[in-house]
Length: 165
Image (cartoon, rainbow, N blue to C red; front, side, top):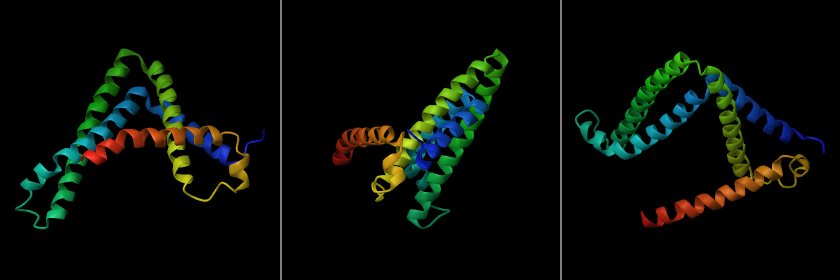
């Protein structure tokens, strides 16, 4: 049971993600992720309304919608960053920084695993099954199983939404 270079890359991704989150802390990491999700939602949901406000400034409809989306996305990220900073000060004032950092490390490890699942899922589209490192990897089969399960789950959830809309 010897690690291949693929196993070491997997370990590195999870370790780096864990260390980054250890430094930043749980609340910062979760709020950052939540801010990105909210920013995407806001840009997707309200770009038409903001694009209508830009008609006198931007003539081309596609450029107007793209500009509105970018404006909403960046504005939401800025507001989220301010909220994140406020929560960071609150966590520091309460003296929970040690717990926050340990929980952050756990969150980072889970995020690193999710990133590996996404990358492995994408790599299945490349002809790598015959590669020796791919076949001999110790960790890869576990992530392949998760990637396959994730793909099936996403198709089950998103499929009906796409067909309806």
